[in-house]
Length: 201
Ligand SMILES: Cc1cc2nc3c(=O)[nH]c(=O)nc-3n(C[C@H](O)[C@H](O)[C@H](O)COP(=O)(O)O)c2cc1C
Image (cartoon, rainbow, N blue to C red; front, side, top):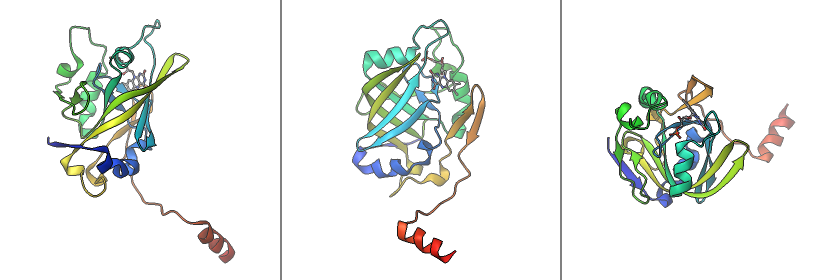
């Protein structure tokens, strides 16, 4: 699949309207390659995202958290429907000598601005530099500044072409998921419009 590396200034507005942020899609990290549901976009200029990483049973840190702390950079890859099976494989508890990427039949591709690789098969990947980390009980909230988007060609246009974009979310742990294909538009109204409608009642 061909993807384009898009400088932030080009895509920022598209990403802001991207529905996946509202649906808390699961994100995939290349550092350790694990799926994460506690993830969202939280800033638009520059673009920031957050992910919350817990600890293992017994309290040891997860590899993802260790790697983000050490490298101060990471890649978030959005999980779309055709990647669900591979995502599920990557979530298994593999021994250290067996990489999740190989096991899931996936491949790494070089990033443009950071050294952490991205997922070649992902339709959208975001290269991030660690901006801040905040302990939240057992979890740590990592705030990443997105320094580069990688977006599949078929999604690129004046605005993100969402018709062929099918990110998934998790509804409930451990294994209930949702699609994001039931879409609709709800026009915004101004205060004068709201008043006019009310007076018309
Ligand atoms: C769909 C899904 C979503 C998950 N979301 C999170 C999450 O938001 N935070 C978290 O700490 N672990 C989450 N997990 C569990 C991690 O993926 C799991 O602990 C993984 O083994 C961590 O790998 P690592 O040690 O390479 O970081 C999730 C697992 C699945 C299957």
